Image (tube, rainbow, N blue to C red; front, side, top):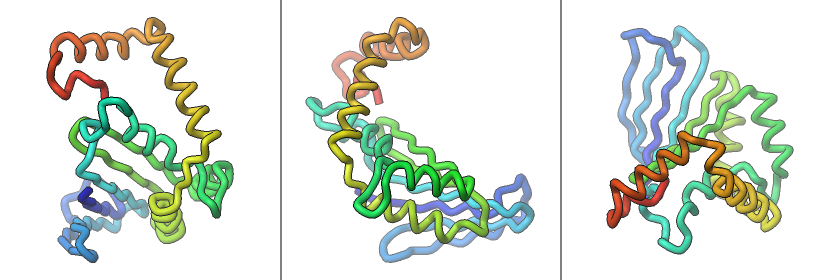
Length: 172
């Protein structure tokens, strides 16, 4: 799986961004810097998406990113959530058919400790059986109640009918 990092430092809608292309040990990095607003945004781009899931284990890429903050041998789920909340960091995964991203946003002064925690999660998440079972139970309950979510139901029906016999018929 190929990883591309995109750093956006101090996001503001200005045209005086400093742009640098770098390679960090085989990882392509695009560094954009604007010193008007002290925030950062890091986007971890993975060149694998829901299409890489095995047919029998459909949804495992989404589950991986959803359970990323479920704990490690060093930190519990509550400690991770508390740390991100303390720093005011947003961690948002996104899985499409073709690729996956993990977006991290926060204040520039907190970039080092929060980035270290995110890297720790990417390397050391344990996916405890208790958390996986709870996640699976919630997903099954959601699918059982699709009638209560008309937009999701329509999206799934559209995929199944219009994209039948293609890999894209499976929801991401």
